[in-house]
Length: 303
Image (cartoon, rainbow, N blue to C red):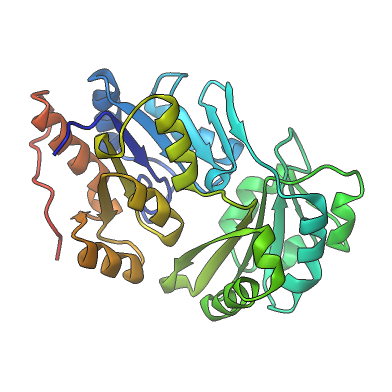
């Protein structure tokens, strides 16, 4: 197995515990140790950049550390230096509005701009009932526009669309979108939380994903897939995991993703609440001969 030069890591369900928004001390230390050892770290998240940054800043990583956000449509450093950005065409975003209403979820569009209006939706009350914590954190950036189609009157294009609802409803939405003509204009990525019967369907510009963004970054830095490790827990991580030569899935991952990992022979580490990321990084550092405060645990499937 090739030495690891780059590690891409998801946030929710991977770096973060199941409850709360504070990354554990052990995970923070392992990330700093990996970066100090010369391993390039990439934070890869479905969150938009401004929503993810407050979670990552306390770790103390270098400003040059790369963050892939909005599921792959925006790539920039933690210090704010731009690398890549892709937009969902205004005409496509407007066309999606009436289609998505039929599935009973709540649709949100993300714009890569400062201040209120980064997030645009029709009803904050309707969304609040589904993901209250998300609403409370993001309230300063949310703007209500009804009907939602008017959000594009200025001609500004969003970087991401999102519709959330029950798992069954979002699976229906994904199936409908995949089998109709509009599928040629968009990219779909689903995230599921079975315990809450909640699913989020991200709608991105064609060809966008965490995996594609990671591939572009790796190519620009002449890093081979065999030298890349990716760690994730949900279906929006799948392309990233497939691209990396050393994929690692969290034990708490969506059941379908765990099954894919087992069939594919991927490594399965401990859960997010058991510092699975730190255990993985400590094992990588041990293989490189780097001392760690904690005893490394071999990467084996967790039952």
